[in-house]
Image (tube, rainbow, N blue to C red; front, top):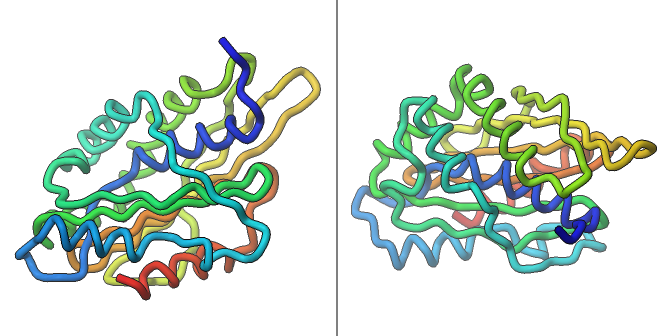
Length: 226
């Protein structure tokens, strides 16, 4: 197996976590239109102009194994998998600065009732308990050969209320790169629900987390475009 670069390491782990969380969203009534929903999601997604100078972008990449991770979390929460009932699901490019990575995923559901069910699940106290073991397993599976993931923890984080409902969680873990190098990683995942639409913003910070106002500024820019 060819060793992954450090940037690939963080990007792979981030995608494994972020894509596991996708659920519901939109800005219209229950007469869903897949073409219009996809266009709206594309327009609202995170853009280079939302970020400070010094960030670059690359096309997003699928994460092997996500097709099993997401349904497992959904079943634990008592909801249908995110792919069921979605009229559109669009991801932004991956934006990166050094080893840090930021991206967004917007999903539109067929009805507001479906979106409400996902919002109830993702804002409940059950979410951390259901998600933590799944994240840990996925991170272990996607870590590059020779790297060890430990101390995976999921907890709520304070976040401004945006849209109809907001849920913010922080995933922390430790990456043992080799005998001499141990790096903490912080992944903030924010879900914002607006009618049928869900914004999912993911901020990955190896080392120290970003300032508390970093993710809220990005989230506000996305919600303003819905």
